[in-house]
Length: 216
Image 1: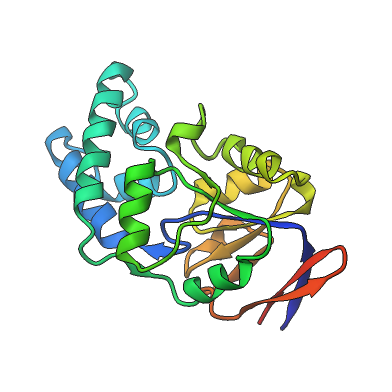
Image 2: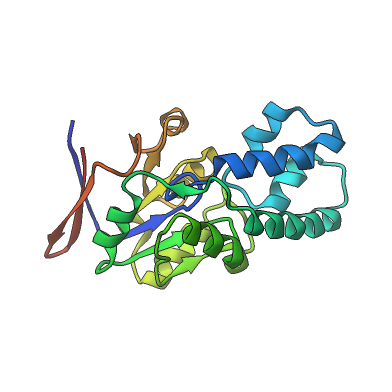
């Protein structure tokens, strides 16, 4: 069933939405978790979509957060250096190309170095505006990143569409008061506004008062 959404700006998560980095994320995080004796399934439930130090705080709630901050930077460095298996999500390149003349931004929990490494590995151009870990004080599921993206684009939150895959990211987009399109096989379970398998069926039509996203 085709759905049409009139919007003025698009905000895009990166991991799981534009690039498939699942293999490297899970490989490195499970290696981090093993010495702590953490349940692997619990780790994988937590780490997607959040900044690393926030994931560590959830998984090791009694630990000094200063240690999390140090290990988070170490994790970011390892992730930036390891892009084996990172590929573009289906339709990502076409969507970014079609958005080139419209207000849009990446809103990612990665830092600039990691974002650049993964987007380059996937062969995707980075939008002019990117809200990264350095840009915010609160990690998803807090809506700060999406609200900041809307503000910098000069668009009201209600006039933005978010593309997200993770539970934390979908929650953040909805908390920002935005329409959320969940991407990937597990997104629908987190109650986005709409859900798609990937980005291949997204088209954009120019309108006088914005542009129209068509799903399907």
